[in-house]
Length: 409
Image (cartoon, rainbow, N blue to C red; front, side, top):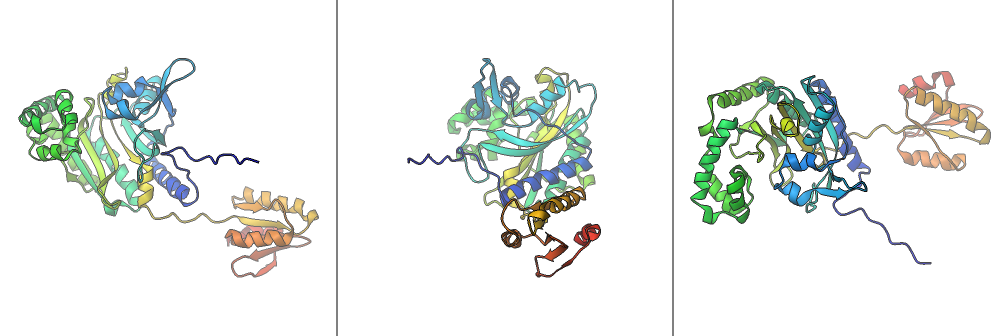
């Protein structure tokens, strides 16, 4: 008989099992708990959206849109895209949910994202993010609180010691226009040394050259003008307010004038939490202010600030979370004992004590499996009920009325 072909996970995807799953969900649960303390509510948006939700917001010429999005036509002829990031879907939900009149909205999200790129350590084609968005607040205090929530999460995950917060300002529209002109003048004087990608960026969005990975571009960026010299008074005050508020929250930071965001709806704050604990320098959490995004999606002018963080990268940084307590094992000592064993099983679960019962095998086999399970106790149900300590092998009779008290210690 011919054996069927062994099916494998699709390239760029990964099963979450065992310790991988424990780390993954520990990141989410920690972020969920911390953001709740900061007043954020959890939203879930669809995994796929109308393609325009992303092409309109990420930019038709961005690498994500042109090279990385999973876009397809559904059976109804509509173009839909698996979400490559979380912010656009949250902003779309704000508009279609009729929530632009009840601001601010403080949103936490967690879930899978999809980008077609070369899989590598800590980066998959189906990857997962946690993130927060604060919509409807235009104050630098809001930016600082969003960053402080991220810092608290990293602290509670135990990774903050290896992470540095880099911040920058993108200024307001007038600041950016003046800075854009200065960058065009600088890079135009060295256009022959720019990479082909950056020559195109010089015409469309010169700020993106500052984020180029090309070594030749990096050398030119070293001597490029700084935005600090082109800030309006209002933009400078906003940036100073951010730094003062971060200090009030007790969040340490370093200024990095090369952090940029390439799209026009970004303004003022840009930031990244960067670690060297994964070898090469890597960003584990990043965000910024995007006051023009909701309006660009057809809604009113709603300011916004947020960040996203890759769960896979954070999972690589954290210590394995403490294993959950193994359930108490219920062992019927004979066929007539199964009904009272089920009664005990239900009683323990009703008292929020994890409990399991074997599905097959004689009492000896079930006890052998219980010893291998890692559980601390087994309840042997026969003519009498016995509580067996699986750590030291001792056992004694126990009355049903006192079983819960005995298990809770």
